[in-house]
Length: 501
Ligand code: ATP
Image 1 (tube, rainbow, N blue to C red):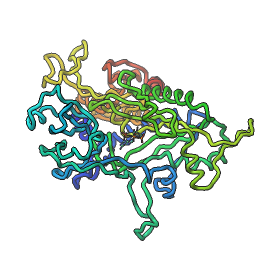
Image 2 (cartoon, helix red, strand yellow):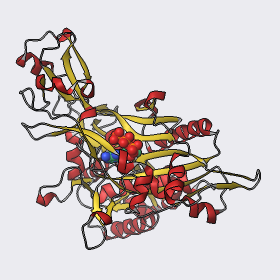
Image 3 (cartoon, rainbow, N blue to C red):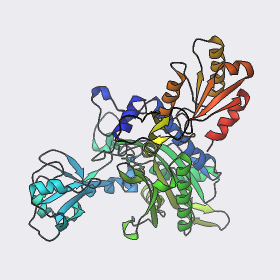
Image 4 (cartoon, rainbow, N blue to C red):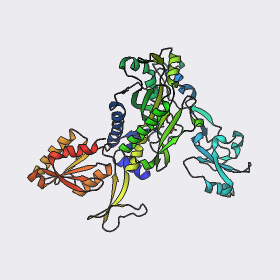
């Protein structure tokens, strides 16, 4: 992750926000390449989820909405995480993400708290109390009675008894609308885009003539005052969501839920996350919210553990019922055929753009040893600094072409041969009309290829002396590094075929 983060900074994918002032925890900026990557993720989602479907429409609702939206949705009352503080180090933790390494039977032994995505602190425990690891087990912090916290050693300290008892902490960012800061004008930055959709359901239902089942999709920023932002951009305080509310006839929940889990998994394979590293976490009945009939999380094997990219929930008609009750406005759907009036149920696939961007970067990132003259590409051995004799190391981002920030790089073989440059500029301008392309004439051609490999550009087009003779160019494939020759007139269809999704 450190290597990847350093590449992301060096090549302009992701920067710490307001870095010149020391940054601010949980906020990130996307640089020139990162913004393209994110746009491509959103574009493939919007195209396949909204535009390609006749029964799905889009919405762009405001970030700050009437505060009663969040009362109705339950966020004011319930959108809370339990947190514990360490009095010694002043660190703050999500209590539900902390495990405790404790003696199986001895209730007077020291216990050791640690983050759930780390290994049990056997060494630390050994130092502070002579332990036999076999006698110990890991249990959730929330299962430990607060009365026993005096024997509990915090994650970042060697002392027992420094953790406070868990307290509920609302994750919504609070602000005030208008010039006076008083409780009457409190407002919230939305912690999800979904409620904007539910709050506009009545209008869209009235004007769109859509028939159930139909969906409303939205992409936009969401804000959560996460207690412990971590793992690079994975858990941020400002992030983007892509959410669909797919409204269905009550009773058809199970089949539509399954449909959307499958459809979303297909989308992940299109954007370049292979099936083998994707997982479904099907929530058991006890884990479900009282109104939900099913929820499946879609997880990806990140280098820091297997973690959620998206949740797909069958939420019944909980949200519409709440908004209808609290607003006093009817939100029922009228079925023209059966003459029935009802509040539709909903399936909600809710994905995070930033987490998907991070997964795509992790998946694409490779260091390879490439042979100087033909032969097999090797995966670099992380313990060996230099490529073996006859090989050269390259860093490559193997993005799916539809996701890559630049689709094509265009190179004149030499920068000081005017005919080559004129021709190359003409090819660049033609392709750049259609896709985001990169023109580069600086340095040896091999180095130019390498620079593009490092930012994941799938195709490199070189204009050489043969081009001037017969209007053909070479097209180099980033992954195989093979070059083929083709007429300039065929370039567009060749690339179009490969970047489509
Ligand atoms: P987690 O359990 O990881 O906090 P969640 O289950 O609360 O996530 P949802 O409320 O289901 O998340 O939000 C839907 C999606 O929004 C998540 O799958 C994730 O991709 C994204 N998301 C949620 N919180 C964050 C965050 N703090 N940073 C980045 N993305 C987030």
